[in-house]
Image (cartoon, rainbow, N blue to C red; front, side):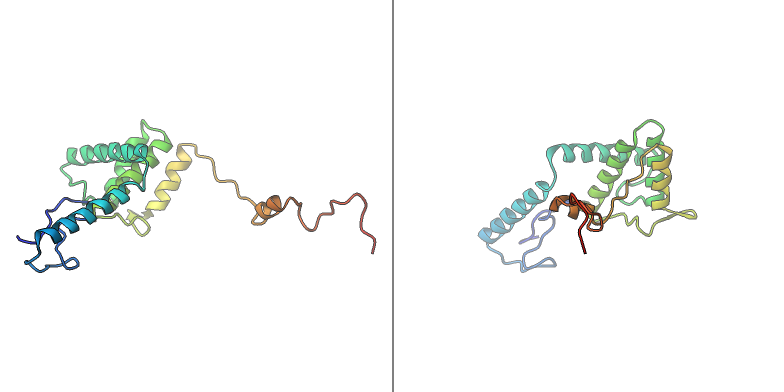
Amino acid sequence: MTGMIPADPGRIGSGLAAGGGGEGPPDLSPNQIAEIQRLAARADHLVDAAHSANTRRAYATAWRQWSAWCLGFNLDPVVADARWLVLHLTALAETRSLSTIELRRAGVLAIRRRLGFPLHLEDATIGEATFQTFLQGLRRSKGARREKKVSRWSNTFRRAGTSHPLRCTCASPPTI
């Protein structure tokens, strides 16, 4: 098709037609097509720069493992739902640390989002539980420490170099 940039899943310029997204005018000049391709390549570079090389490598490993696991059950890793992700994470929990499991989850979710098939886990249910309940159980069973709650004002006082305003820090109590 004239005036169309070839498809490459997950890339900004993928299947981009001139004229804003849908079918564009077929009479684009070669210079216009080249400019669209240049801009799309630059945008893809900026998207890639959002993550460090180590993060991209870790996400690629997560995606390869997720894909291999899904294909072992004749599933398409791009469209498998949250229940399958839960089973995959459960399988990982048998041999991997919590940080590795959470990194693999983040990698799968990021790549699916980039491919245009995001998994919406906020409202996903697995049987009678939610995905968040599953993660809480996973963290508890793997021995993750709960976050320590900090006073809402403690950082403010620390930055100001003062103690709590209701506590007197002077040498002698103030006279009234």
